[in-house]
Image (cartoon, rainbow, N blue to C red; front, side):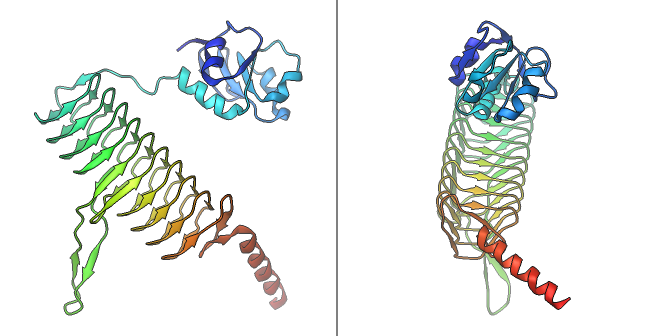
Length: 332
């Protein structure tokens, strides 16, 4: 899609230096840019390569206002954010063709909003509601009593179990499973056998959440598993039953959250983090990759990075490593 710099600047709230009528057709890295592309620079040291590139224009910070250049600039407080928003403006998410494919199986009680696309071999059970402008890709299965909000994107082979609710603008990538039974069993002390504990709760996913490919989110056992507004979950993440995840949380790949864990707002969780049951991660904490959090532990410290198993503040962890290194040298 072609846009003028004036249109892009208005959308990302940037100031233009140069020809506002210049047409832009895409975004790229500095190294890969071609004529018509938009690039960005966060550090002044990277501005010369950007100006020497084939790019049509550059999104930069306020430091660029003092430079003389023939290449148009978009001045933004947060260049990376402005670049990301410009990409949304220039590049359509996917091709969209409203309607129900002939191979789809849609129950008569299903309520489809306006401009909904239902792809090949989709199965939608009874009493399902799908909001206006949503896209259900090939092979998805949506169980009874599910609600999908407006402008959602469900990519191929997503499975949604009964009694799950998705808010507006939720994106679920291929192969994800939402609302399946949690891992809950009761052991008979007499026979040693395990009996399944009821898994009859709900799953609630709020607006603007994104869930990565092949991730799984269990419904509550008796209550509700909840993922709050704006949270972003990477591929291959598991969220157990009764977990509560706050707003604007970021969770990287291969992380696992055990039952009844609570993650408060704006937490950042690195890859391969293991979170045991009934843990609480308080607002703004940062868990480094491969950290381990034991049962019922509370992680507290806005902006503090925690690392290791059991996780502790990274400064403390590095001191321990230094002591171990000195002891090892003494022994050798």
